[in-house]
Length: 590
Image 1 (cartoon, helix red, strand yellow):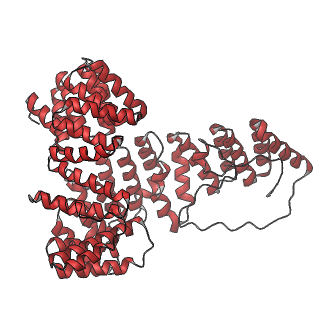
Image 2 (cartoon, rainbow, N blue to C red):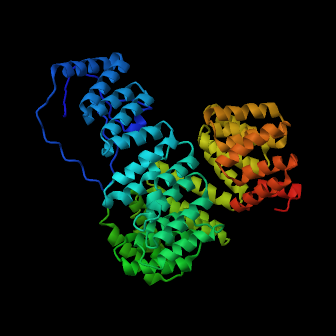
């Protein structure tokens, strides 16, 4: 029987979904756990005469009145009423009262009672599942997870399985999450209809746990069960890396069939990232032939044609992209794509020496950030060809439509000079800017970093202290000054204090932790340095951190592991100066 009790004195109900309610209550009504995207909304139940007697009415009245002041009592009364009536709304209300008092175990008890009373209720099962995950009781989630999949109608099952990784997003033990999901999906993993998506889900959870080898294995097994499924291929696409060629093999096998055009575009983007332009162009041409109304394919094809100086073909591709994108909803991605097309069409016109047309295309770019980003890339190419003056002029010639444009142009030119290791020119450019605004902390910080590159260490310290005076919470300045002192082995106690101050503003930052580990090493605290640097490197694999961690390991006699870390660092960034210096000084052969 369904009771729709409305009491003016009743407690305010919650509106947040199950996991977030445990952290922060809010007024309103808790909706049921989110349905899969394809799941139709439940029909409004037909109104029926209430069979509530006076005793039950009084019990519910007391439950609601107590929910505010004595939530434990209110919860007990409402849950008892739910058990007497098997009414799902009363079970849900008991869960809500527990949420209000942040009593996670009580909420789970009510949800489990609800599920036991009505085993076929997907809503009850979802509450149990989401509460378990919110409480981080991952090991207990296998059974409700299995039930969630089993209760889903066959047409919805793929969507339900594919969205499972989001349920586990906030759990702390990612490896356990992957194991539990694999146990729960045991029946789906071997079925051709669901094996692809199920193994794809297991693989994503393994990937979230840092188990890339296990994720790749899942992609391969999923493809073996369901060769035409896009889910294993999509997982493999995200795993594509020169160090993991087996991942691309999975993608290629999927592409040999009749792949989804969006998937083929994803593969083309991965090939572009790897600078395999010819292969990328072949994939894009297949997309434009198979799905000629996909705007992105024409944008990428035009870019590749422009690189090969195929001006007429590139112009046609960019114009086709603009034509198709006009019908799309305005989004940041679409606006950026259009800006790229306008800039590229201007480049085509410039190559033809039609400067009026080039300027006309550039005038269509409204967002200065888009223009600066695109022009900076072009200027970088010019500088790489030894045409640095021309590259700088290209940036300086950009129009300034608002005060922020001048700042964007300045930072773009400074970065261009940095990339070309023109430290003095970059420093002078920033010095001119900071002379006009001596309290601009960001520019002062950048100038300080260039002073360090020039070996002007007293000037660097002066500038960083100016930054701290202007913005006492600028943690990068504390860290940079502390690290500089530690790296030179001077004023080490002060260096440590500065770095610890930086960590107060940015707790857990792996780069600042790297600085702290390095100062501990300089202080002779090698065991503590190893602990800190190990954690920092796990949180953020980075060549600079690898250099410091490798040196600490080397000093402790752990030469094999040190060499392995140095080798990983080179894979991350072979040009990192700190890493190269450490390898050379220690005479390591990675």
